[in-house]
Image (cartoon, rainbow, N blue to C red; front, side, top):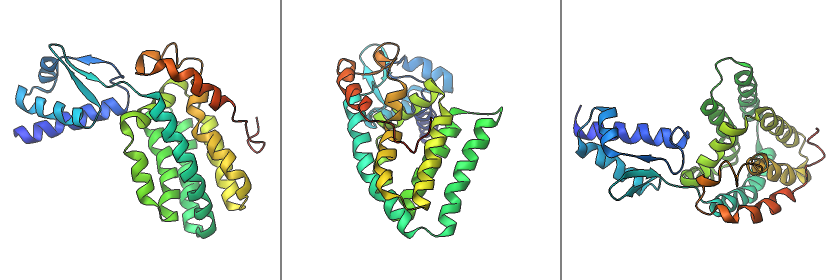
Length: 245
C-alpha cells in the first residue's frame, strides 16, 4: 500500500472510531502503538494524525503521543440552540411543500428505526445514521441542504455528543416516539406545536444524561464546571402535551 493510501486508511479508521466514541474524549494514544496496529511506518501515520489534529479531533501531547480532544459543552449547547431555530423553520417549510413521496421517505426512515430497535443486530452507529437520515430528509426536501451540512461540520463537539447520548443512555424508544409525533404534526400542519417538540427533542440528549454529565462523563468536557448552569436552562423546557408519557 502506498504511503498516501496508508495515511488515508489510518485517518479514516481513527476518525470513525473517534466519532463513534470507540476512542473517547481525552483518550491518549502512543504514535508507535498506532504504527504497530496498522503495520505502517511512522511517516504516513504522522500525516494521518496531523490531519485529525487539523480537524480538531486529536491534539498532539509532547513526549506522549496524541489525545482525542475534549468536548466543549458551551459549544454543544449553542449548536443545539441554533439548530432548534433552524429546524423549526425547516420543518414548517417541509410540511408546506412536501409531496407524498417525501412523506413516505420520512415514514420509511421511521420504520427502519423501529425495525433496527427490535433487531438482535442492533448497533448504536446504525441508529445514529437512521436518526440523521430522517432529519436530513427534512432539510433536503425543504431546500436547505447547506444548513444540514453546517450542522454536520460540528463533528468535533456536537456529533460526538449525540453519539454519547446514544451509547450511554439507550433511550431509543423516546427518540423514535418524538420523531413520530413530529411527523404527525407536519402531516396535519399543526405548526404551533412544532417549535416546542423540536426543542424538547433536540435538547433530549442533555436531559437524558443530566445525572451523569458532571460525574461519570465530566472528564470528557473541557468546561465541565459550567454544565450545571446549562442544565438549569434545559430542564426548564417543559414536555409538550402532544408527547404522551
